Length: 514
Image (cartoon, rainbow, N blue to C red; front, side, top):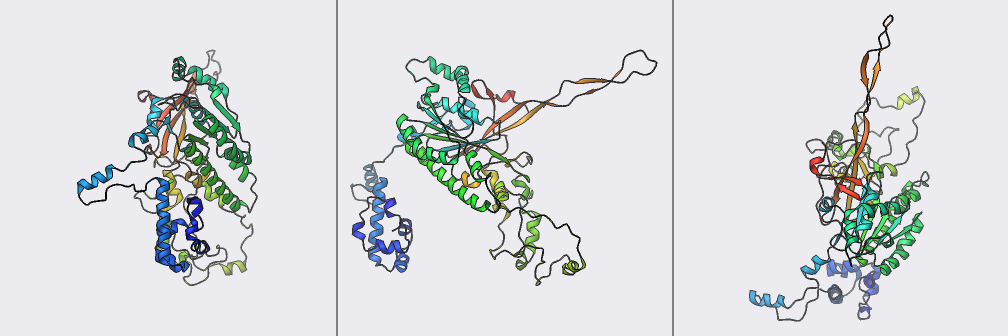
């Protein structure tokens, strides 16, 4: 079997030495042995069915023993209720509900309202992403977590933190400012015998390129985490090195191969971070950038009644053998789809001649059995009818990107970097958004020119002034998470916050504007 020793390293393969070579030759995995019918495996490998049943039972028992769910010795099962209760009373669970509840821990954001929106804070054992545009407060939230993880439970883990930077170095001046201005950190410093948050408990490392980032995460970070009992690993940001490696140096004709290589590296990075969080029981938080989404939101591709757009209706009324000769183009495209397309060539700058006019179709309706016009792209292979618009990425991404879920918002939509591949590697996504607040500028009076023969001054004619931006409003929302439901469409259920000297602070509801 191809992966038996990876799944069960201590499985006694010597008893089944005559079966394993044939199973490896036909690429039968452990999952195939347990899920497929024994008769189908026997036809595929030409092995005795009885021997295959014995091997399947042995693998199943070994998996039960390895996972701790094997049956223990006890009274024989009886159909009566009393006998059944006595039988289950002798079975001991690996973890009791109290143990599972005690195992759950989160890292506070140093604000009760923000913690309530996050279901208690940032959970340990998972990979959490904080995404948003520049200036939305991502780094400020990460710095708050670096200080909060040092607090004792329930606000923290009482453990140090590790900060890995891919762009700007760690801002120790801002950390010292938070430590001196935040009341929760000041209160903890006054408690005798309690661990005090300090900049000495924050480790930092810089990864200027993807090669050094991979080396540090693979070899150095696990050793340092085990040595210092680190409770939080922060990567700020995850998209910087991938953009520099696969986009800026990408030449023409290599975009497809670069996207494939980048997807492989993203899956590998997600596996490293998840294994790090699960094995060392810590929280992994990464910051991600966003890109502008052109063409509107996901609702633009669907009608107000929830039906497909008119273009798809016209395609549905066209015979199927004509649909195969034309490519259905969605009404909008994601950044991933736009990057994977080759650059369009320039249009010919010549006027049509008489020979070209003879080749043009006589009617706007294409002939049913005639060949396609020469200017059209070649027909696509027969892959069936196009998928429904509701299954397209442009429509589905409103549920996992954090933008586009509000039908009233059609401008200013964003998409987290690294695309759908990276979205499948994280367990929780927090989106930070912002909007400018404009106010009336100090008005300047404009006077008419003095009339001839009038010694009086000019008369004020109008007040001229342009609206000026006063400040920013910021919101935080949960896009998806394993322990808390999503916030909801738009910023209706999002928590508005502001950046203060001591970190992030939620804005009281009664003082929120509009």
